[in-house]
Amino acid sequence: MRSARLVLTALTAFLLLIGSFAAGFILPDAVNAQGPRQFLASLQLLPERFEQLASPADSQDSTQLPIIDTYWTVLTELTDKYYGKKLDSRQLTYYAIRGMLEPLNDPYTRFLDPKEAKDMREQNEGNFVGIGARLDVDDKTHQIYIREPLEKSPAERAGLRKGDVILKVDGKSIAGMDILEVVKKIRGQENTTVRLTIQRPKVVKPLEFSIVRAVVQYEIVKHEMLDPERKIGYIRLFSFNEKSDSKFDDALTDLEKNGMKALILDLRDNPGGLLTTAVDIGSRFIERGPIVIIRERGGRENTLSVEEEKHNHRRYPLAVVINSRSASASEIVAGAIRDNSAGVLVGATTFGKGKVQTIVPLIDGSALSITTAKYLTPNRVDINKVGIKPDVEVAEPDAGSLDDEEDARRHPQVRKAREILEKRLDGVSAASVPERAQPVVPPVGRG
Image (cartoon, rainbow, N blue to C red; front, side):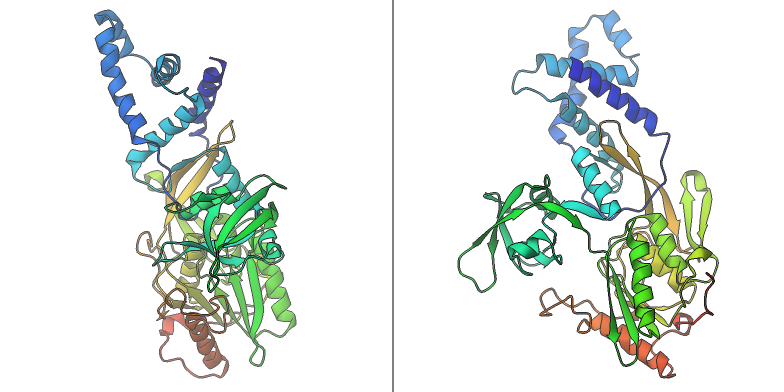
């Protein structure tokens, strides 16, 4: 009963906290959290059973029960009387909350249990406990494979390679699991060991790897002078978390020291992140005016404008590379650059996530993600479910068509961005680029 009362306290706090949102931020597109339909069906049937067992007077009183008392009654009856396996009151509560959200049919409004909430906090902070490998799913075989072990990570030190297919985690097959389930199994407590069974291309027998989990820094920014002769810099941004803007600033500083004259910003596969970080990074490319317009419930609008303190670098001829997995915060930045004619967009139409989520932390470590607003580009374009179409379309290559898809020099979308900037630096009019999207070079910024 004591645990049940703790659950009641948590649920009460949950209902109160819904009305007091923290600062909203954009989240990556994620799997819709759902509770078992069987449990929801049993909740729907129980009132009829109570009516049959109760007296008419009791039945009439029960219809007046406040919502929280109704939940408390159902939970108590289940935990006290259910014939079968012992029920966990906390897990039943989590299932009930997920069931409450299911009719909304909104993949972004979801309940996060304490482990999921912790993972999200770590993602926004820029670090996590795990092996340090980016995973992906093969579109044809549906196998989950190592897309890239992060530099100096436990995965790299253990000998995992790009292209390794994961067969088992701790001796259990992952066949049929989605990628988030596999990630959960691989992550864990620091200094604990996870065992992966790997099928390596061109190796007949599966390989076994025992890897000690550690705190790993997310790969946030990768940069290089893509064309040392023409001084075309390249920055790939993997996510928009708390560390992204400072890392981005460092990358710009390093490229400027080496004489950068033009810049490629690569947002391919970037799922988004914090709204505030999107405004920070967007402000580095735009002189003034709105970065994004937030339309809240009831139609009230809030404009987030350029932060002039971010004008501590020159702004260069700019090409932004996007694809179908560039989402949310990536789309905010790309949309602001397009609408302000601050650069040219190259690649494929983006994902189309134009919704804002607010995260409500709960007292047991869980959290609620609620869609609380939608956003519009500075020109008031709603990109939700339609995405942002590039100025210059370049088809995405098939998976596996490149020996090393992380080699920016060889990627067709990045190559096209480079060609456009080369023409701009040479003073040649790029006829294939719409006039509206021609990159501009504003004066040296303030700061």
